[in-house]
Length: 508
Ligand SMILES: Cc1cc2nc3c(=O)[nH]c(=O)nc-3n(C[C@H](O)[C@H](O)[C@H](O)COP(=O)(O)OP(=O)(O)OC[C@H]3O[C@@H](n4cnc5c(N)ncnc54)[C@H](O)[C@@H]3O)c2cc1C
Image (cartoon, rainbow, N blue to C red; front, side):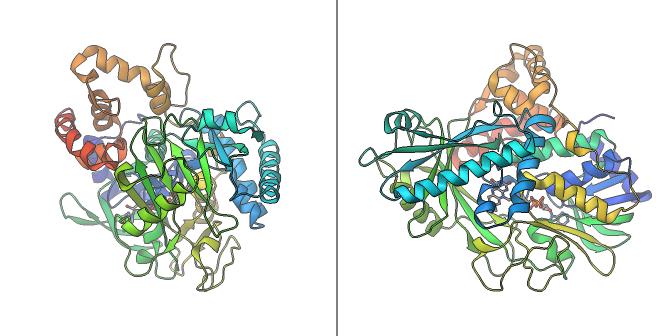
């Protein structure tokens, strides 16, 4: 079946979803829900999957974009979580999304804030992480081992580092995804190729074990989708549909720094957070020249917003932490934008957790387990929550196993996502990293209509916007600017690109 998602397919499949009874209804199309739709559809089950907004509307687009091997979980004794992360990272790097996920180097600058004994402990941790890599089967050529660099070499990779007292740096490697929202789009399209009906702008109003009351957010019409099993994958919003699920959301803020704010940065940075033993701020150079820097971990009380705000206090905190490692402290003027996401952390204190996570009530959210939970409510709805982007596949598999115990085994560990095929020689690197084997089709589009080769922002062409409308399910300008591309992370870039996004919608 075709993997293309667009307005016409949505309309057609919406009609079918109202009359058929499907094997599985998945609610929420972040990484977990899109992964569950793919897991179920590729087992041969019939699937409808709905999202109140768009693909990757929730937390999945606000991550640090690390596909991490779980090193930090080792530090807190969560060996199972660490092993699972390394195995899932391997699947993404080698089999399912090698076009979107790659290895990236990180430096921990050795300054007086990192005394020798601490540096030795961190290095021992990196070596354990490397052992997890080996155990997961990831070859060194894909993910090199850690090493120690002298100050001169560290400065060639990160010229903005403070030179005074720099003893060198610890170099480690981990996975990262080129864009978290693109991973979700690839999952949803691969699910669609296996026959799943992917329905955005469809809000579940109520859930039961045999289906959901749904509202089409474009027309306001309400209807039922009937299903033999229901999976709630609405992340931080899960408790709104399944009240027995208890979450303790925590806000993580990232800054978007202007290109060049940190010079020619060729590696990510781990910057120790003063006063914390095992927490680091992250600096993550992006392929488009922007640099993301994060990240906070603040408990959130009260109602859960659709799009969390990054407060100025988080911005000031991050600038201060980064300043401790840099030659020139950053100022507010270096910040082009900021974004925040809410971690859907499971409050295991009053929840029966199928995955065995434990946490103490009222403690800091940074200490809560990152293990996912699969929870069955009395009416039979299966909720899958917690975890992380890296482990979306395993979460999806566990959820489908719980919801459909008679289904055949999951196939997704080796199932390539859309775009994972060979890239044609001569394909520009930027297109190859975002579209993989589909990049050639974008080039064809530009060849047929040279006006589409015109750049919109950050090297993104009009052709990419048109492609998103025709094949990636973009229905409006926000889908185009905020999720199919990330132009919208910087408000002035977004305003400048808006006319091009409006024009692209006419190509549907
Ligand atoms: C700041 C931050 C940084 C992170 N960094 C990393 C990282 O680097 N690496 C990593 O592996 N993990 C990271 N994580 C964790 C990871 O991002 C999340 O665990 C993961 O994205 C959660 O995905 P999800 O699909 O479960 O939820 P979401 O992505 O939030 O998806 C839930 C979806 O449900 C939809 N929805 C809600 N209510 C309804 C309804 N009533 N009807 C229909 N749809 C509905 C929403 O629109 C949304 O699209 C980070 C998290 C945060 C907050």
